Amino acid sequence: MKDDRTTRLELITDCALYGGASLVWYGNILFRRLPNATYGESQAIYWAALAVFGAVGLAAALKRECRLWVFLRWLILAYAIYTVCAYAQTYGRILVAAAVICLAVSCAYGLWLRLRMAGGRRRRRHPYIRRWLSASSSVFAVGALAVMVLLGTSRIFGDNLIRASEQKMEVGDVAGMMESSADTLVRLKEETWRGLSTVEKLNVLQTVASIQAVQLGLPNEIRVGASNLEEHILGNYSDDTYMIAIDLDHLENGSARDVLNTCFHELYHSYEHRAAEAYRDASTELKTLVLYRRAAEYAWELDCYENAKENPERYIAQRCEVDSRAYADGAADEYFRFIDEYAPEYE
Image (cartoon, rainbow, N blue to C red):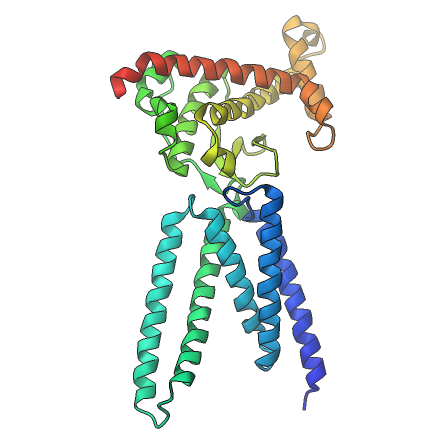
């Protein structure tokens, strides 16, 4: 017969391993600030929920013959509650659909169980209620886990949690592309922007990025998406995948101009990478040309990039950052002038 103390120790060890692994997975992929809360407050709520549900789950597991699933069920429910609170605006329909499906399965099982137990000798209500509640919590835990895996899949296999829809645009002169996309660009008007869904906002930014990529003469296609970035980081650009990532909170709650400015800022980094490549590929004789002087600065800074978190002052002063901010301000002004000119035709 197995020593009960050994079984309990194994359970506690397994709970610690699964709890730690889930913290790393959720923290790196799905954790985000709660609405109307600071990043620090969100972390405090997150840790408190996990501590409470984890403690209750461990106690229940020890009481129920050291069953690991009992602990995991409580732990998953803690993540589920946080996910619903954090992503209600972003994935409201998916969350509601999942809840309806789980509720339907739970009710169906409850009806089946009631009919099954009604025919037996035991007619007490308590055993039925306990079994139904236990099964229902398992159903909701499985459903919540499936939703979280679904939401995190794109982040696991890509750079962004959400991506803009695929768009096909005819490449031409920038003025013509803007005019042909005017019905999309006017959605940057603040009163319209606030009513757009997360994906709709990304689609507008994707249109803008495609137009500006042509304006900058970029040979690579730019893709736009949204993700949970580190605190105080509004956007970033990956030259490995040509992907722009906009912070999800910034995208959903920021003004149209601020988000557009962030998109242009990150887009210009792609131009800087191409300029640096052109400088590196140029012959030694041509590298002395005036037109390569700015590109030479970009090449050096991109090789020795100063991170904003590690050295804020040097980060701000870098030529690649100064030029990206200037470009973003000018490009945003141009788009809003265009919107003011063409908006009446599309209202």
